[in-house]
Length: 241
Ligand SMILES: Nc1ncnc2c1ncn2[C@@H]1O[C@H](COP(=O)(O)OP(=O)(O)OP(=O)(O)O)[C@@H](O)[C@H]1O
Ligand SMILES: [Mg+2]
Image 1: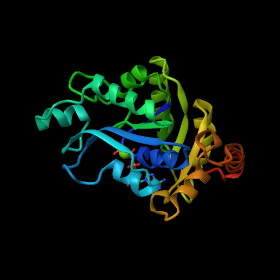
Image 2: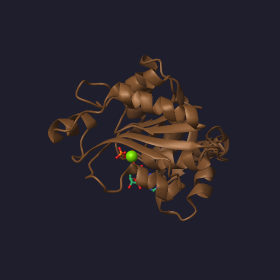
Image 3: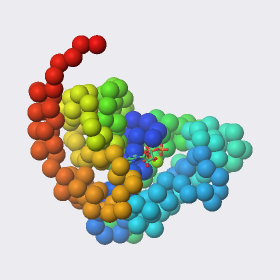
Image 4: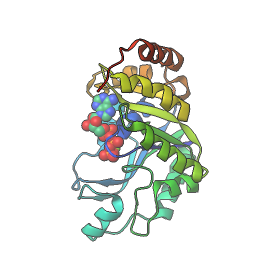
C-alpha cells in the first residue's frame, strides 16, 4: 500500500541495484516496475532480471521496451513503436499498489528524461502517483551539483524525497567521497550507502540490509558512517594540485 519511485542523478548510478536492495529488505508483498526499458532487444535480460537475480523478487513488471540505448522518448521515436502512455502506466501502478505492500518503480536515466514523445517525465509520474522519490547518487567528485539539481527539481514539483542512497561506495574512498558524505547528507536524508561490489555478492539480501538504513528496512547506522566520514575529512592530509 505504498509506492516508492527510485530515481537518480543519471544513468548507471546504481538505481537497479538500489531498487533490488530495497526490495530485498522490504516486508510483505513487493512488486517492482520498470515502466520503460531501453537498450535491449525483446527477451534480453534487463533491469528486472537483475532485481530477480539479486533480490529474488519475481513480481516484476516492464511496460515498454525499446532497443536503442537512449531515453524512452528518443528510443520510441527511432523504433517506430508506440510510446509509453502516462495514464496507462499510472493505472497499472495503482492496480499493483492496491494488492501489494510496496511497489518500487525504477525510472530511466535521471528524473527529467522524457518518457514519451509527448514529453512526460518521471517527475510527472511522481506527481500523478503522489509518491516519494528515492534519489540514487554517485559518491565522488561531481555528484554534489547533480544531486542538488535533482533535489531542486523534485522540490519544484512538490515531490516528497524519501532520501538519498549513495549507489556505489568504493572500497578505497578518496577525499572527495568522504567530504561528499557531509554535503550529500546536508541536501537530503542519507538512507543508504551501497558498497561497490554489492551486485556481485552471493548473499545479497544480507549485505543489502547492512547497507540500508532502518527507514528502508535495513540496519545501516547512518550516524556512525557520518562520524567516520567526518573523521576521515578531518585527518586527511592536505594536498595541492
Ligand atoms: N553497489 C554496487 N556494487 C557493484 N556494482 C554496482 C553497484 N551499483 C551499481 N553497480 C553496477 O553498475 C552498473 C550500473 O548500475 P545500475 O544498473 O544499477 O544503474 P542504473 O542507474 O540502474 O542504470 P540505468 O539508468 O541503465 O537503469 C551495473 O553494472 C551494476 O551492476
Ligand atoms: Mg537500471
